Amino acid sequence: MAKKVKVAIIGTNGLPAKYGGFETLTNYLTINLKDNFDFIVYCSKTSKANRLRTYNDAKLIYLPLRANGYQSVIFDIISILHAWFTVDKLLILGSSGALIFPFKVLFRKRIVLNIGGIDWGRSKWSFLVKKYIHFAEWLCVKFSDVVITDNKHIQKLYKQYYNCDSVLIEYGGDHTKKLDLDNDLFIKYPFLRNPYILNVSRAQSDNNIHMLIEAFIKIPYRNLVIISNWQTSDYGKEILIKNRNKYPNIHLVDAIYDIDELDRIRSNAWLYIHSHSFCGTAPSLVEAMNLKLPIICFYAETNIETTENKSLYFKNEEELLTILAGITEDKLDTIKKDLFEIASRRYKWNIISEKYYNCLK
Image (cartoon, rainbow, N blue to C red; front, side, top):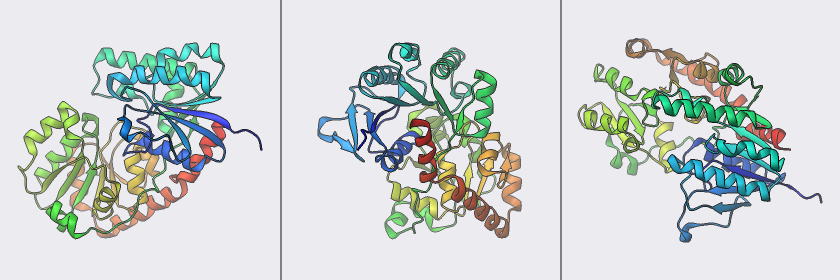
């Protein structure tokens, strides 16, 4: 039997996967492609008692650093340097390790890169941070053998900004499960007993959580549930201070990392609002599509590409209120059927894994 190619996956918190796009991607690649490759996954700082030697047959290597925040730069650089001496190919997720990419010429190892979007364009960054991230992305693209983009619009931008011909590979969402609400959840979240509209977003300004709240203040007969990591940003903390427990129809829920609990809440939403204005193919959106939810989206080229223009789209609070005032059950039924058909055709992990295989083989 031929020896399997060794592939390092770098740039995530590692395995087992918690809720997160790159972590979930890593999980399903190591499940679906373990017969093709020997995977090594670099993992974020973890207590010795909780460390595993392997997961999904992938070897886990732990570093004494966090894979996110300011430590991510050092985390990725050390991971890449170690991988150059130990594996055949590198799958790098994100641009944190950009400064070491030029040294790739000394090692001649194949690098497959998925930056994850045009991160420098996010409104949350300062001018200088944006400039650095832009430079880091350019550096990564320049020294990678294969560049992956997760959305057709992002693919066009990479061509425009970096003169880069990238491979389009989106995300899967079929790991979600359609589950019923139960009595335990009704006790924990009593507001779930009534029809509700749901949003799941990171607490950052380009996800427009503030816009949703301002709109739903004006329609107190509609229940809005927002699940977010409020405490991780000044933006999120400010929203909590201003709005938590102030409006009986607006329910701000802390981030949920129990996937079954999250799926129960998502599965039973009357309507899902995807409010991201600056992302590629957002995992939360394709997950909602796979759950056969009716979805309306913020008007962004990436969201239109993901949903093939089969949703309804809003640019501001007024347009959102207009959609909510006029939407019918028949229209909701049409949207959820159309979006589920797209998800069944495009956003499945077996499809995504096969595309990664073609890049790594």
